[in-house]
Amino acid sequence: MKVIISGGGSGGHIFPAVAIANAIKRRWPDAEILFVGAQGRMEMEKVPAAGYEIKGLPIAGLQRKITIENILKNALLPYKVIKSRLMVRGILRGFNPDIVVGVGGFASEPTLKTASAMGFTTLIQEQNSYAGLTNKTLAKSAAKICVAYDNMERFFPKDRIVFTGNPVRKEIEELSLTREEGCAEFSLDPVKRVVLSVGGSLGARTINEMILNNLDYFRKKDIQLIWQTGRWMYQDASAAVKEKQLEPWIKVKEFVTRMDCAYAAADVVVSRAGAIAISELCLVGKPIILVPSPNVAEDHQTKNAMALADKGAAIVVADKKCAELGISTLDKLLDDEGRRRSMSSSIKAMGVRHSADLIVDEIEKLIKHSK
Image 1 (tube, rainbow, N blue to C red):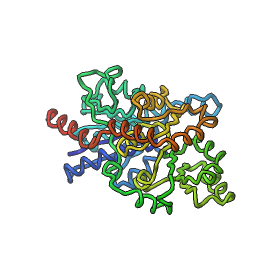
Image 2 (cartoon, rainbow, N blue to C red):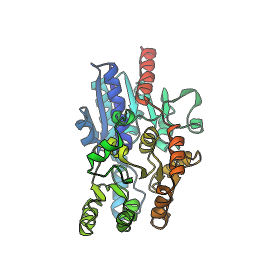
Image 3 (cartoon, rainbow, N blue to C red):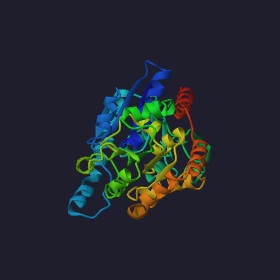
Image 4 (cartoon, one colour):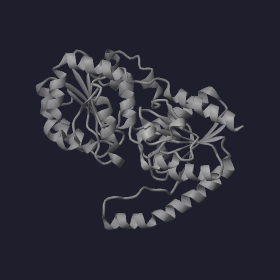
C-alpha cells in the first residue's frame, strides 16, 4: 500500500490530511505514506512532527492584492507551476503510489493534475460547503469526491460524491475529558464561566482586536478566557493582559496544543468558520459564535457558518460588525442558558464521527477496483 497525500497551507487542510494518514496506518500498519506540500508553508513543519515524510514544491497562490511585490510574485507563478509539475512527475515515478489524495491547498493542484495525467487514481476531500476553484477543476478527473456538507452536487458530479464528513483529530473525536480536567490544564476555576476564543492556526485579527479592546469585560463579569491569539498578536496580547493584571481571568496562548482540554473547559466558543473548526465543534457540541473570515476564496467561511446558523446551531457575526457587536453578542449568549442548551443540541446533531475511516473505506475500494 502506497499513498500520496497532497495539500496544506493551514491547519484546516493539514489536520484532516494527517487524520487520513493515521487512519490508513491503523488499517495497514505497513503502508507507505508520502506527503507533498508547498515550500515555506506550515505543512513542512507539522507533517514531519506527526511522523510522516513530506516533499515540498515551489508552488504559491495567486496574490490578489495589487502591490509591486505581489505583481512580481504573480509574474513568477507560471514558472513555479511548471517547475512544481515537473517535480511531481519525478515524485510519482519514484514512489509509484496506489492512489493520490488531495485535501486542498496550493500543492494539491499540481500534484493531482499531474497524477491524473499520468494515469494514477485520485481522490479529493472537500472540507467546505462551497467548493473552491481548485477542487472543482480536480474533480473532473477524480475517481471519488469526499464531502462534508449536503447539496454538493452543485459543484461535483453526483455519481462520484461520497458524504464522509471532515476528519478531525482523534483526541477531539473521542473527547471524554470532564470540565474539571479541562479547566485544570489552564489553571482555571471550574465553577466560573469559560470562553474559548480561537482564530484558526494562524490567528484572526478581527476577533483578537475585539477581545483586546474589551479586556476589562472579563474581570467585570468574572468570566474566564482561553485566548488563542496566533503568532502575530501573541506578544501584544500577553503584554496587555499582564499590564492590566488579568492573568487570573485570561490565559493567553499563541497556539493551544491541548485543544481537547480547551473544548472540555469552554461554555462558549468564539471562532472563525473554517471547515475543520466547525467539524470539531459539531462533535464536542459547544455553543458557538462564528466570525467568518472575509479573506477566503468565494467567501466560503460565511457559507460554512450559515449552514449551521440556518439550523439554530450557531450565531454568526459578520467580520465588519465584530468590533461593534462581538462582546454584546457573547454577553447575551452567556446569560441565556436555555439558548446555549438548544444550540448545543442542534450542533451535536450535525456531527459526523469516524470521517477519516469513511474516507479510507473509499480509498480501499478504489485501490481494489484499479487492481
